[in-house]
Amino acid sequence: MGEFKNRITVSIYDQHYTIIGEDEPSHIRHVAGLVDSRIREISKYNSGLDTSRKAVLTAVNIMDDYVKLQEKYEELLAAYESEGQGPVND
Image (cartoon, rainbow, N blue to C red; front, side, top):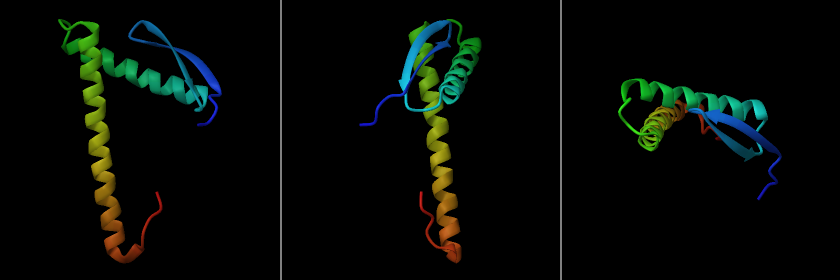
């Protein structure tokens, strides 16, 4: 395993978390900001849910977006390769 280089404190939904990772601090803050925005968006429409349920709903929504993007990527890759462009290295 690689060494962790960065230790960053971020705020997500008014809670502070220390993230340790190899990515640049700006990237870690950006990702945390996106999660914070998404959970706040979920909270606007689901104010009756507790924080844990909001977090799970946020995770499900984010994974749904991820899976759809992954499927679209695979479709585009297959179309590219079927046009005789050759394989694309990931």
